Image (cartoon, rainbow over all chains, first blue to last red; front, side):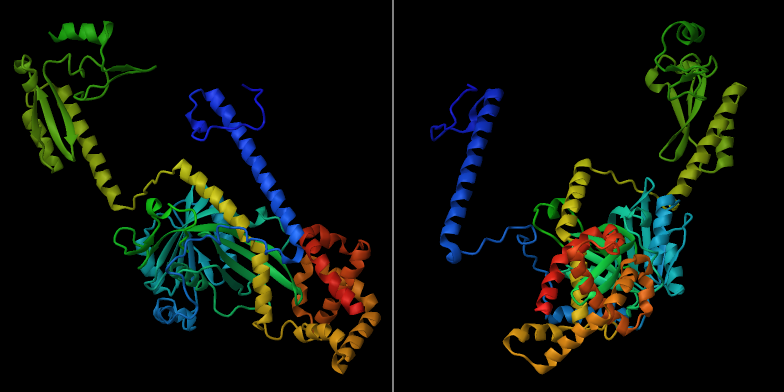
Length: 311
Length: 290
């Protein structure tokens, strides 16, 4: 009953889930839980006493397990000295950019009939990315836009997809026949929603920081992002655009930094922020029917483990 | 007989195809020509009736005559109409010759309407079609939660600051920022072990500088703390930067004594960063004094 003693000895083959009565089963489960907690606390105390008793000779504290620590090893992780990867990167579609043969020129557009938030987001994105132009689409098919863009020397095309007045998707296509990446975009914050007191981003070319792109796929996506910005950042502007990958979510931030000393830097966020999650990577330019997909996110196969990431 | 049928179904009793609204009655029967519930357009109450119906993009003319009223299976006779609009109209005329004017007229009207919407369908399929993808609530929730956790795990500000400091160390910025860097630090550490003349000289110099320029220090610091003027710093010369850096150390030292009003606004704007670094700079100032 409810007034049972604290220390209960269960027969060895007993399990709480075998009781048919729900109330009683619940009660017994709570009691079992309390007992477990007590034991855990006692074990902790004991360990701490042992540690204090040993003093300097105590073994070092165990490293706590994080998801990043426990990440399933991905076989496509890039080794910095890998020759094959280096060779691939020298000959892929971004080679002309990294050899400074082409200057990026970006076209930003939206899906049909963009609403206020999306429009403003596009404008802000255009100020963040140098040498970019915003054009509104009124019912034009993407397949017909692309040859026109190539003719006018654009290197990249960004399409921001909108749903219910908020932007929720991003298609990034490298133009002269380059890969197309389709992202889901979330937590979009416009400039006025960010708590900061900075001015607008200036016209200087920002630096780019790409964090945590470890696998081959991550590498190619990273290069794609890098190719959006001109290769020579203007340090006078002191602006930096960051693409940080964490657990397959890519966080974009735009900051202004200032070095107060050699060990101290202050950053101030200007510019919009958003997070992206890669949905698919296609080999050619945007073509939903006949395109050859390099990578698609398949929920059933790829979302099975919590410690497995693809970027 | 049709009159009896109509008097029963139309007005008095229940007709399962009839739908009443405030202003009008509709007929849901598939063979109805106009869609309204009238004496003349009820397929049940007219023994001689015709309709146009379309299946899979082709139009058919359905006809019902009195002779076949006893055979429900063979009641509706159907004629495939020509794809050509005018020829189909002629076909209708030819099949419904000697039929009441009302039915003929309404059939042609219905046929016109149907062809128009078929044309529209064909045109629309050529244009881009918006594909609606359903959201799955559970998955959306899961993704949102994972994104939040990832954001917390990412510690973006720290990562960015670390990266920037790394780049500074690796000299990617060249000569823009001129901090008296690692050599000075190393010298600091070596000062207890051995006394090198160079480092001593440097230290004395810097201490002298501090003593002299202490008054300047406070004023310039206000520029630094006001973020709106951050852009002005672009044009600052190297000397100014050096002084500012010294300023920072001294100012933070004075900050530790008591909160100076000058640092107030800066604190308000980015309180948490200032608090973090307060501890960091204190030890260096202490060792310098020593």
